[in-house]
Length: 235
Image 1 (spheres, rainbow, N blue to C red):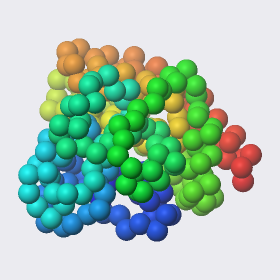
Image 2: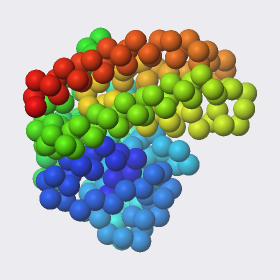
Image 3: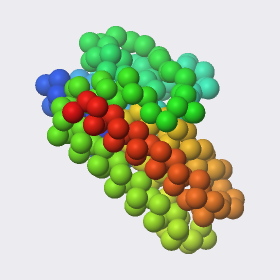
Image 4: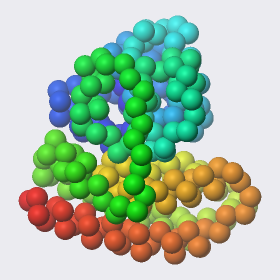
């Protein structure tokens, strides 16, 4: 089962695994209690219930109480690894998710692993090359097209949302989801900016969304050019 990481689903299915998905930690914990899963890949930062709390609930009882649970995060982790182990996590992997890291998890290796993000690098071509090789041309193209649709929708939201309105609460979840998509294709510079925006939203207070819109537009244009260029070279 994957919780909040639909971009990883295609890679898992490519390796012959059956995948179930849930959109938040509470639903993930409930489903894991009712169904037995071998491996659960879980986002640490989710709406309704975070990954650590969801993991603790799964470990208490239910069909997947003894499943391997691995957290994935788009952030550089600074907290003590013991926090994750104490919550019942068997490992923590950072995004963009390396194919070899994923295979090690599926083989049952227990590990806590995070990698430094390179915020000034527009595109991690090595990572994206692995993804494209695993997915094939059509699904890789769909993945990159989906990223474009997500970022275009987010740009509209940044111009429309009033931070004093109730709908502003959903913006952080949208930004987090977008960061996951950026990590999936190795868009490191875009990922770093989205992580920064998410952090500012999480801290609360006044957030100048127009400034963020103007900041993200050129980064996305640069990222899209790099994605198109790599796709043209590969295919």
